[in-house]
Length: 72
Image (cartoon, rainbow, N blue to C red; front, side):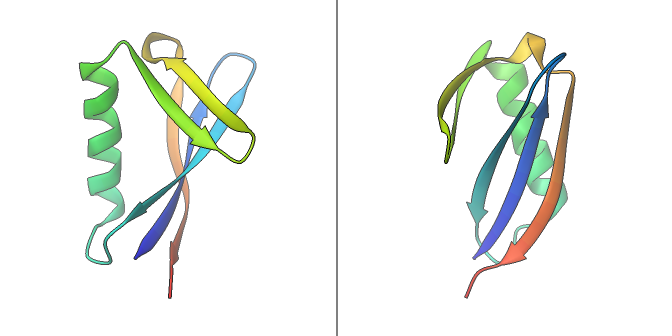
């Protein structure tokens, strides 16, 4: 399994989430899935260790995958 750290940047806030995918999934595949989710839905949920967030996809300024880690 691979764990990706995804950062959603807003005007005054950054929200991160951990996404766990299969070992053969590439960073580009995760980026594509996130962009498709943002195009398809006006609002979507993000869960992290600080809580649950409902994100308005129109307010997201930048999306970045900062870390890729292989889980054993």
